[in-house]
Length: 274
Image 1 (cartoon, rainbow, N blue to C red):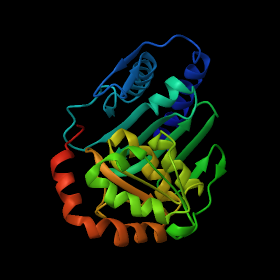
Image 2 (tube, rainbow, N blue to C red):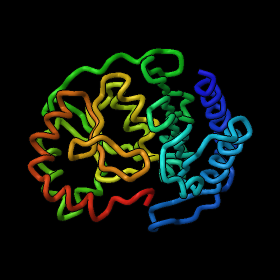
Image 3 (cartoon, helix red, strand yellow):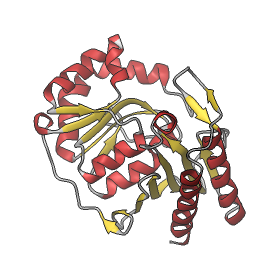
């Protein structure tokens, strides 16, 4: 519980700093492509969190999107997996709809998850076995829904890929409607709150899902890759998270019929932290 309270505190402090400096000019760089942005605030926030953790828990390990821990090969000990600003494009263009995301794992087992909606000052957090919370209000267990009566979320980019469109289009057609929020961490939270019934995507890195995974599971969501397998917290994964009914429906009726193609994609593209 001591680690949990400490994490809550330093995440809140980092978020407060972001809010106080939100209108300052940003230094913006690109990473893997022109739409994959990183700002000085991403780097400063990760460094702030890293230094705070190491000052208090020097023996802990930290895997961060902006460079820390890329040499980590196993999950021994206490491992913090962090995205200092999940939804950087939203941060740059909207100055909202982004989050600080942290998942904490002890010897590979889930311990605690945090997703901080910075501009709305809403901390979503969960200690394994103790439920999930929005600030000091406990989240209810989510209800089962079927696809045809559900809002779902996904990245529309996947609809433009020839191989994937034949998998995704029938899902989009059957769902009541589809949303795109631009922050994977907040997508997990939306499922946990029952705002959407499912979130599906072809590729997320560990820092994108490590915190939200724990929060969603604490309210009854099922989280796997598109093949129905458990997620590896040190590797990129495909993701489907939703209430049990819609997760089963998506898996059995839409994803597993394309098992060979999905296995090919997983083999080709998903590398550790890559």
